[in-house]
Length: 95
Image (cartoon, rainbow, N blue to C red; front, side, top):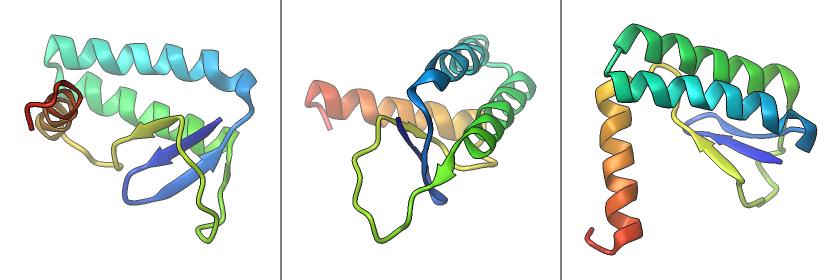
C-alpha cells in the first residue's frame, strides 16, 4: 500500500497495516464531522505517525500511484474541509 503525505512524499506500508490506518482514519473523519479542531489535530498526528513508523519512504525518483493521500502535517480543520470540498467537486464534475 502506498500512502502520500502532501508536501512530504510517499510511504510504502504492508497491506496488513490497512486496518490500523482505517481505524485512525475513522477517528479523523469523526473529528471533521464533529468540527472538533483539537480532536482533528490529534487524529491527524496519530495517522501521520503510524504511516511514518510503519512504512518506509518511497524514493522520490520512483513514480508510484498512491492508494491513500493524507494532508500535510499541521493542516487545520478548515483547510481539510476545503480540500474535501474541492475533491468532492472534482469527483462530481462541478469544479
